[in-house]
Length: 286
Image (tube, rainbow, N blue to C red; front, side, top):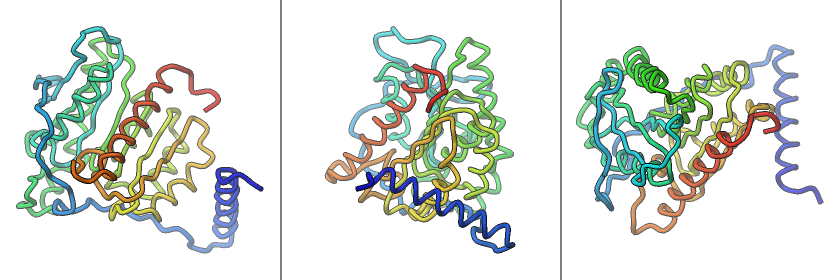
């Protein structure tokens, strides 16, 4: 009997072969789709289970939430950059997530690439209008300024971990090889499959995705399209699908929902393992 994981790989290769043949014949099989930004009302906002311990600093002219291991013994040349969802620093769970990275031994930085204007958690602002003022042309320079400053200060090994809105930037940094490893959970605003075709053509770093079964943004169907592109990516690719949860699960979980709590922790531990593996060894043989 063929193992399930080998069977899945063979099926993916078969789908790619059919796709290639169809393209040669001029058929339009896969059309690019923009992963939508999920509405604010479809996110979970619950009471914080602890108090943030990090502090805000100005780095490269950008307000950045910084959290470092309490013991003080950590690699000074290594950092995790947390690419937040559209609710930014006012959403306490984003600060706590950054603290979580510090608690496992990494200095962690969450840049406010919204310029102090994150999307309100109550959804009181028109989302389309908000995006006209917070597109990549506005947010990218702020993020790049922080990364350049960190590198000038001796932090040469940067791992990116993006959530929702931040998943787009986890992909952009991977496309440009600006970090040494990239993970993301329920990313939005991506063009599928074209953004990952660019990854396949340009990237040389390990990339990981955590998707949600009930996500209305990166749906299972779109995640499968990503897999079909990335199946031959030789620098390390992992996609973990989490059952029973929806968009935003890796940032916020209802404490009374054991499935949500378990999925959130599983995504964090999976991202941690992926980053540690990338930092510990060369990319050859992934």
